[in-house]
Image (cartoon, rainbow, N blue to C red; front, side, top):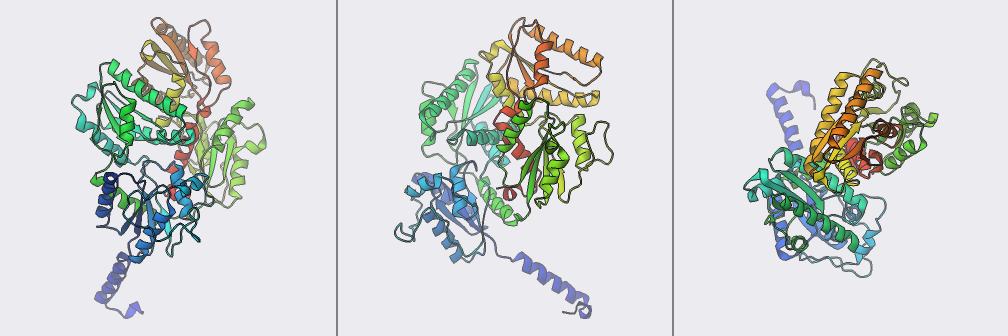
Length: 575
């Protein structure tokens, strides 16, 4: 077509036709994955699907990674004329063997998880209302990938979507009469493994943080009951649930129980059995029915459709490092635990060998041909000389700060630097677990959070602001008599260090007059800094918890979240 020969109106019509052609691109089909249960449970999912179907073609596959039901739903979508399919898991969490097994069945995962063999032996009709067209006879392998003539992608489960927090909060508010004298307890089913449970709790922690901001409840607790785990783990989870409720009622607070379940179908009964004899009010429904979930399904399908899974990303975790081998080794262990599909490496600002230097680690990742290197500083605070140093290396600032160990990185791959832990909710969870490890009676105990701290006064004020946020969370979640915080500023001039030491000793001395004192070091790993805290407090009465942040399983999850959050299409890039 020769555009020069077109009149202005003709050109406008041509452009309009192109735009209309783009707008009329066929919508993706939605494969709505749901566990399935009793008729009432399934009906709510079917009602949700009917609402989504007003905007996008949708078919439901009930079951736990049930190939027959998934294949039938895919076939129905193809018969309806869709040219691509997005699987949307209507599950509370992506951290589940059901999800990874489904990914394999959809050819989105290279290896089948071992649990798929077990799921393949189960019967999963679940009253879904669709008879299978693929009988379990010769030629049908329930543990092999499905067949689809159109591309299939998969969105994430609900996880920490803000919409979930909004629904949970609305459930709590519907029962509330006096928020300032009420404790909300969010209870989820939870997975079997400890590692996956940590990830569930991390997502629940993010949801609860949003709920806390938007409400005035006395506090909001969260935990999983882990119904499918071995008996000792279930018993421990049940005991923890009862303890949380008993503590709140013992304080004279009303307990509002909000199950984080897709819908009611039996699990809520098990929760009630665990709490026999205790006083509480439980929400009358799960996440369904709620019209907001239909919008989530539609948005999840559209977002997964436009994701670009072709980019390759590397993860580079940077820590300060120590001459103590155990310090660096612990950091290496936690990075090995990070769920990341691309290349990853560890570097230290004070390496034990050239191989551990930032420049060499970045060069090794660059040689793998990745498009981007995501640098995650495994550090307590972004308000320090070391983070500014990393900004220079990652080309986020043009001039070198006063404290550097090398030159700016020269890589073909793009560089993205995230922030350090600062006031992250996951750090609060780690610190709470560390405090609990040495606590016996929170109401009669004081906690002192002790961090290294920076040189400059302005940075120190910012660092203290983050510590204050963590202290408030710790106070709210565990009910200690008081929670103090301080930075020691080890690298500052002697006068500043001495003043910090005197302040620390005074805090511990005063707190020990009427409570037991628990000292919680806010440090990445165990080394000289933690030993130095003990020396500063010689002669005083206190108990210090052992282990740094990197020894906690949630440290790996924090790294994963930081890295994913730095990528615009993280869910598809790192699955």
